[in-house]
Length: 138
Image (cartoon, rainbow, N blue to C red; front, side):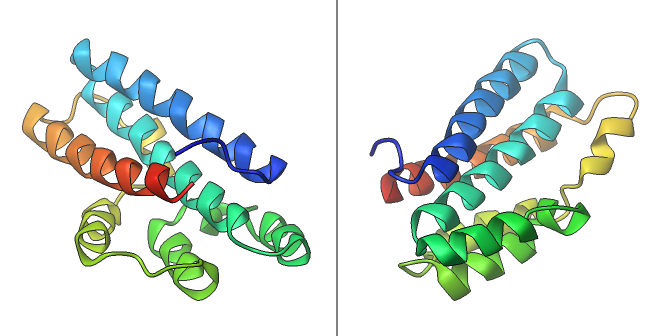
């Protein structure tokens, strides 16, 4: 466990760590919608960091270009990219957690009200499992 060697991967790794800390603070304050929103970014950033850390520099530049636009926030698409280019397979339990997060969207930024606490706790539980796996891969 440690910082990725590739500078581009380190940027996403550090962002993932910060978004997760922010999500935990919001969840502790019962701000469930904001917590889930930022926790989703945690996984997005970890997947991007893993991808960038595991590919050659030329492919890294290509992936960075692909990380633009709304598709770059899609967990399923990022998981597919990792399966194509990552250096190891995604374990089945992590794939299940990724599937649970598939409905996450940046549209949460416009959501009003609060998600149910149980729903938010389950989301964060999956984020933690994915985070633990991702950090073990760095």
